[in-house]
Length: 583
View 1 (cartoon, rainbow, N blue to C red):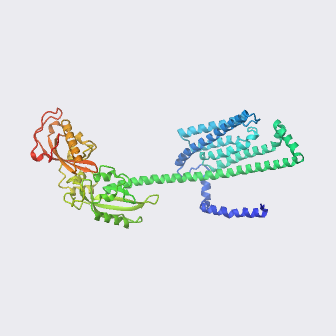
View 2 (view 1 turned 30 degrees about the vertical axis):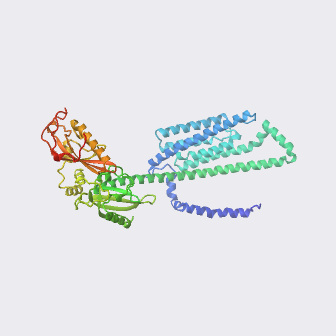
View 3 (view 1 turned 45 degrees about the vertical axis):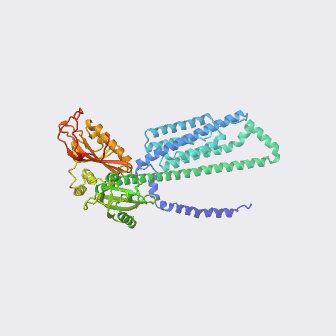
């Protein structure tokens, strides 16, 4: 094997310079070097600048808790491992020298206690940055004593120096002052260097003075004879190289700690800025959503396959769908193939760089079969991963009349529609938007005076009701059960009738059924309560049954609500059900 000459070593060392410059340039170091003055002003002291120092301190406290816990665990594991190893050697009758002195054990235990106390404070209430820096200096001062001569036995110096390297890195999250990190690491390096040099000087003396070491040395002298001096010189050279290498590594740890401290601060600063930006984006998103909610009846995001990304209760309420709609293809809501084709063409023509949203007129079919004219707005966008998304907003187009599905051309497996259902729900929604109320009133001028209730026939949950009904029952919202609106005397009878009708509808192949129900509502004034005849239309929707109750007549004869006395007058033949129901 050829040995590299001194000239070759020099050339190899010079070649490292362009390599370092290339790496410096690739990592963005040139840009950072141009801002050296700014960084030196901001990082060589505990900052009092316009940076979000409070948020940075919160992140630093969280990171310091984990790093301190790791440091204490490393020190504890090393102590346990050393004790177990010594116990094993003593059981084997192998003579060993003491690893820890009393002073060294007290220093390690005190360092652990101080770290655990600081960890408790950080976990309970946090700490100001300046006090964290003071605590860092105290822990580094104790760390300097780990390998000092007189406190640490000579045979434990290399291990103690290695432990200080780990702990010096673990304490870095406690401070953001590069000056404190540099000075404390220099002090720790001076203590480690003193301990290593002292151990090297006293190594020969220990071997001669020690009983076991003396016998080993004498035995080596008998074996080596005249070559004993060469062995001593070689051992001394090896120990000198070992000590010099360890000292050089300790110097490298100083610069590594400074670099890690600088990178840690820059990383925390970048993380905080990104967190602030994300919070601002969330706030702006909520504001934009509120603005879109005022302009549009519903707005939502579609993925690349035109499926709803999230559950949209507003769209479900508008189209009278009972179940969650996440993952539903938006094409299913469009009424005709022509509208679907136009919608896809609009999406394909759109671009993420468009200044304005694209718009089109289309017809949407709701859950009960009504065809509603809509304005559809579309904006193409993308998420953080580059996946295509579509922001869609829809609102009712009031210049056209609402189409009833009974008058439209039926499609295969098309559900029977409930007349006037969509317009009634939108008329009484109580929206504060003037233009939306105007559009709804124009599309349902002939229906505003009707009393109706829209409910889930299975769970009896009310979806919407006319303003007159809500005013009579003194309800602020429709978040109640349909049977709660019915008087106590009629509640059981109406419940049985609806249950029988739902069972009959689920067993038969019909998509809709009609039921005439006479009932009294739970009004506070018993004198004003009258028997009313309601026309309940039940309809299947995706394995669910929707009920639409509409008032068709009143009976003038009063009856007592609370006692349950009196009987209903016979219903006229035209008000009976079209098919028999068993009560």
